[in-house]
Image (cartoon, rainbow, N blue to C red; front, side, top):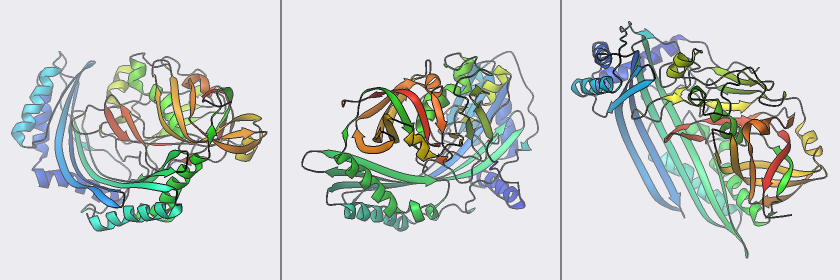
Length: 492
């Protein structure tokens, strides 16, 4: 399948994990005895499992609009979420006060919500072995606002210099350092320090007849060193401005059923939404997914293989451990068109009798974990991207996407293409505007007839929403051809 990205555990990794745990012990006075007591209270009314999720976040955000700093913020937050599982029932309580009294109160509250006949003993804590996918200084980021402000000001200047038709520029930078500690009644004991940053540029262009928009961004689990080379503020600004200017001369997208080529990288968001969510175990356990009960059966063309991989160094969706303290991994979802399995957390794996894929994620300590994607992408094939284009008589080439929606129960999706072109007689011709792709995820994948060798992951800007929770993710795919897809547009 694909290469393994996880790195071996070193002495440095072990030292870092100890330091992660020490942060909560020293800053908030947490002790192993207190953890054991909280878990005991959480299981006092019966229950199969309990866990504690401690979180401390330092966040910075800056925004420039029309060359003026319109927003600047820095803040910290900390809290603990306590969960109790009893059968299919979940009791959950959280507190932003990490005193022993408030933690014990939250544990008792969660216990009463999930009270049940079963009662499990608390096992001795055991460190969870994890990789080191995003090393950061043990002291965290140096919060120098001037250096971060300079990034977005550089982007602003570059976008304005691109063309006199650029009439408005907005640029923003966000960064956080999240520290977590998880202790569970099954003995799991894990911690992590997770950096995350992102730079975005938004441009409006105008001519005599039209006003258009363009955007670009990048990020990942690292620091300011991410924004160099091809990911410099200047390159991002020029890309955003190029997209806006391109749309000024775009023709109306044709409508109807036709061949569609998806470009590499960010178009993987269609795969994420139309297929990925349907492969999360909670939907399948409840039989509300279009993929429920289809493991071992063909759900796509034999050219399609899809994985979810949380172990890629520095990627936005990567994690050393998930939010239940389990190491992340590479999970094969679809292999040569055959559905191989689902993304699971501890609850769904226990109830479904399957392995835990380390996919339990949550937005914050205020939220219950659930199965979520990390970096989800289609594996590369053998076709030349140029041959894929040449094979299309009349169709659409979609390079970038904006918004979209999907119905998990039936797989139906609608996506808007923010950058797309006509393909005529095997050649890319005019840019088009207002193109939408309409289809059904499981059905659409069956029409994949060519898969390029140019697998590309997105630039590190993805955020996934589910049940009111948002988490950072990655997507990707190579150039692919779908022999049939419905395109919505107002052209001929």
